[in-house]
Structures are given as C-alpha cells and as structure tokens.
Image (cartoon, rainbow, N blue to C red; front, top):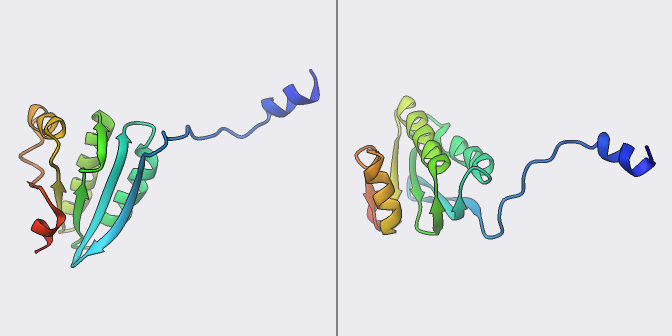
Length: 129
C-alpha cells in the first residue's frame, strides 16, 4: 500500500455536495421567519435545509413561512422536511405557511394529501400582512 492509498483509507467521511444553485436562506418579514428554498430540494440538500427549518421552528410560538417559489424541484425528502417543520412549529404553539405557485409543487402537495395541512399563498407579503 502506498502513501496515497493509506491517506484515502483514513480520510474522514464527507457529506455529499449539493448541486450548484441549491440552497436555503432565512430572513424576517414582520413577525414571520421566512425560509426560502432554492434549486433542487432533494435528499442531497436535506441536511442544510433541516438545520435552517429547525432553527426557524425552535422558538415557542414561531411563525414560519416556507417559500417554495425559487425551488425548481421537490421530492419526498422535501415533503418530509416540510412535515417535520410543521410538527415542530405546531408542537411549540406556532404556525407554518407555504408560498407556492408552481403547478407541479401544488399538484404534489395535493396528490400526497398534504395540501390541507399547509396553507398556501402566492406571496410572502400576502401571508405576513
């Protein structure tokens, strides 16, 4: 075994990288914390997004808006993250709303039966007014 092989054998495991353009950002709009999801929201992006949604839903009575407009793709991992965030918000006396305008995302919520659990509006301003 040469030095390069030995180095690889003892290397720390790395998290898979998320695709370029995928991300999450959080900001405040009035008394709401807005979590904006961008790009492909799938299992590869779930870890970073979970950290952000957990932080947003941690305070007692947190009012959270998840903005899906910049998300180009969502899968079952994304739906799982939304359900986790909803449960955490409700358990702490808070609320969670979605901003969702893409027909495919709305259809996915409807087909899975989740549309009734996530009030949805076309803009952040409409919810935070």
